[in-house]
Length: 261
Image (cartoon, rainbow, N blue to C red):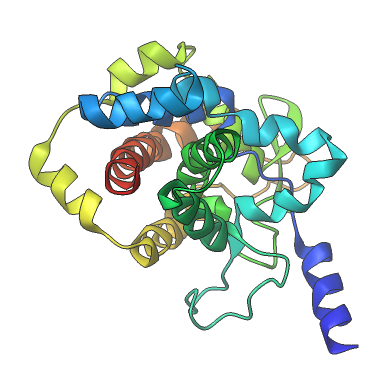
């Protein structure tokens, strides 16, 4: 009975999680691919049939409409209350993003795994590395990672999670290739620090952004809602940090693939 209760609880608290949207996930994939050694890139292409990491980046979201992949929805996020860590929370028995990244990393190292299964592992790793660096995919339980924080964005009803998944990236009006050129400023010293950080640090970094994510939403004006044009001010405050998170995700993805292919 206790296990049934826990499973039901997590089902209620689960949320739609689509990461950085199509553009953002491709940005992460392309940043990573540009950092792979020729040997690692050859191994990737041998598995993917020369599909790029950007090509594969959104497949884990697209398959959500397939009932055979319904169980994978919980792999895209983890909910951690303020003041806690991944080690102190009660884990979702259906899985989470940390367990999924560790499992697919192990799949890459398995010499007996089929090429198709390794392709799936690469696609999920590209995608989930983007997700775990999107701060609301390491979200608060009480508002379902921002999904329950309802907003209007230029007059359209939405929520905070969707703003971070897609609408902030769309503000730039760029293709993913142009977006990579815009944010991919090489900095070997910083990248060395990013590459060596453990997965616990990735989550801590995302959680540390909560004051930025929530703190720059202005108060709702009675009978009017959010102030007019608040969206521009919000974008100005958070876009730099958002773009850096995509860059860090790409750098770490490249390092993960180099180590495990």
